[in-house]
Image (cartoon, rainbow, N blue to C red; front, top):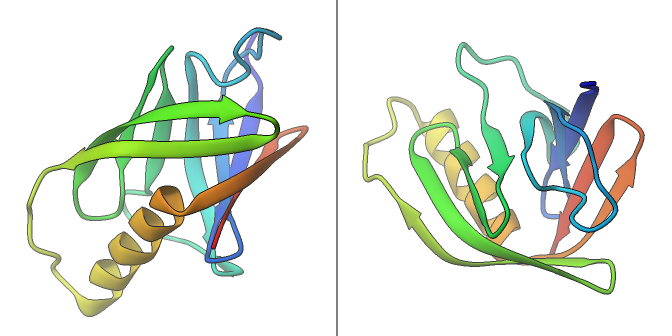
Amino acid sequence: MSMKKAIFASFLGLFFVGCALFPNADIFKDSSWTLSSISNESLTLEKMPSLTFSKERAAGFNGVNNFSANYKLSNGKIIFSDMLSTRMAALSPKLAKLEEDFTNILLNANSFELNGDLLVIKGG
């Protein structure tokens, strides 16, 4: 069974929309999310940023480049580390800012909330 999901991204949090099942042992394993909002702004782009979780790694598209990172869940917190990314140039200042904000939120994430179809990743 699959469910539509959402996630929000900002210095306060990331909102994504995705599709996955959430087993109790690892709620994000094999889930995919599409960014729907960052810094309290809804997004409408030709290719939306995304985030996919496997057992130990997260990967996705940040608006300009593809990336992957380790992630760890602990006591209601999510920590991303060892991020790798392609090095394509942004075609516009708006996309460059999106990429920077999205990446900073993930690397500074301090908590997450999962509420139905909404995943919020909060960063400092």
